[in-house]
Length: 42
Image (cartoon, rainbow, N blue to C red; front, side):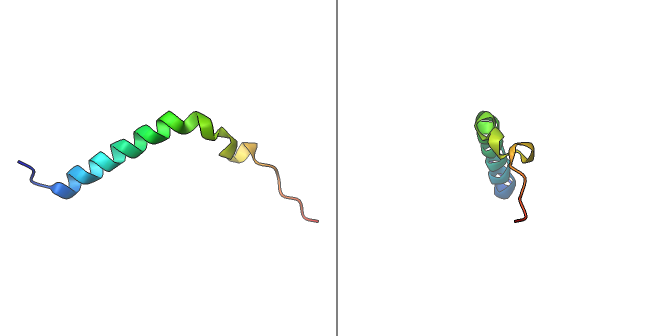
């Protein structure tokens, strides 16, 4: 019996997003601030 459908949905969503981020984290290292080119005021 499910007593709180919202909590179940939220927890499922968080687990899915967390696993997606952790699996794809290595592919997005170029987005880290240390890897971005500095801005040039020309």
